[in-house]
Image 1 (cartoon, one colour):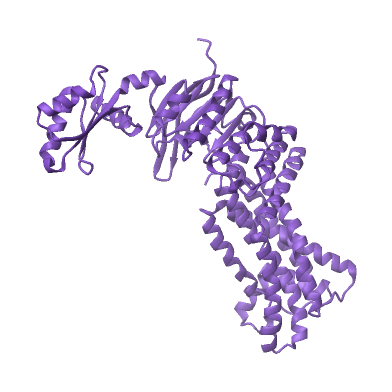
Image 2 (tube, helix red, strand yellow):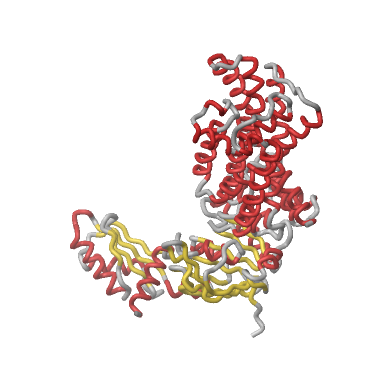
Length: 260
Length: 315
């Protein structure tokens, strides 16, 4: 266990150093949501039935969750780069903890995300979004965001380790930006056709987004809809627990075994 | 009889989907020696290193490195080895100093060890630049330095000088010699006969996933001898090429190899008394229109042609 802490911390520092020397992807994944917020909020927002002001407040929690769900993409990029550039094989020949590399990557990503969400929050506040509920539940909302990030990162790490090449991981990773499109992050789901609505509401992004709107006091919990959306906090926690329980052990095992 | 082996493998086999990468590889590397694993691309060198460094489990067969089984006692093996090469590299996004400090932390070595190594490998000036900005030679030196953060019992070098200029190559060679003098067992893979010749106490020729031949460089070279190659004039066409082959066959007693595109006939020369003037005189006597002729140490390709030809003849 202490080996995991010392080795994991070393890998964490290394991942933060990487971001400092090659910041492009991190900066891109953290600034795109700000662009999306402005674009959706003012361009799409003006064409929707919902008043613009209201839509922008609706959109901020959705974009926070969409940004956090990018953990799949960044997790994939990070793991695929390490796996295909030979660094990971060097780690795997060292007498170090067999889970330190993926754990270090996931924790470094969590720290980066916590900082990276700040610009989005500031732009959101400038656009009129507010924390309308109590502070304890707002803290809970941020905690949930980071937990969801942690969960999606492990999905990404597993996919990145299993990828055939960096390019393949890049293409599949980039495609994950579509996941929030089929959720209630950008649009209310109650207007969707029945089957599509069911899919969108069972998307984990919908549960977390609804939980955030509830915890920030932006919108009440919907009365009807799929279970994770009508019970958003429990639904979100359950989703995170399931994703972590499935993908963390698979990713760690994949790293330790290492055969491609 | 008291030889202890730093690397000992028996019947290693490894199959990837449709490629049998290792077919019963036996290796024995005595402690404190440098062993060169020599072979063309695809011969199984890298797979062998990956199995011996615990990166890959063999399908069948066993291997012990530094006294421990690579599958059952992988953790113990990892404590005694270091790996440098095309597959185990440093992080290009980190600076040289950051890379070495990272490995120092992971190996519980003092941080000052990183600075020592940067100094020793002439990287102190570039210590704070990302490794991806390094030249090929600097990058390899950093790779090697990362393997020496703690002193390994067995050092694996996977094609340590492929793609390097002669000056950088010599620097790496010098570092490897120094390690060998200090008693580190080194197993290096290479495509270059010269590299194995320069560094290795023992050479293992790998072909199609098994050890095709093993011995000291001198013994190996004596078996392979030299290589004579004749270029014939284009006007002579096919008959000239054949005439050259006949003369070479008579002189060397080995199977000549024809290359129609380059218009060359070549043959392995085992007799040390066979000189180039004599070859040219015989060709002239045979009225072969020779444009160029040479007698030189064989390239690895020719060594392999020779060895595989002999193998087929023996069947």
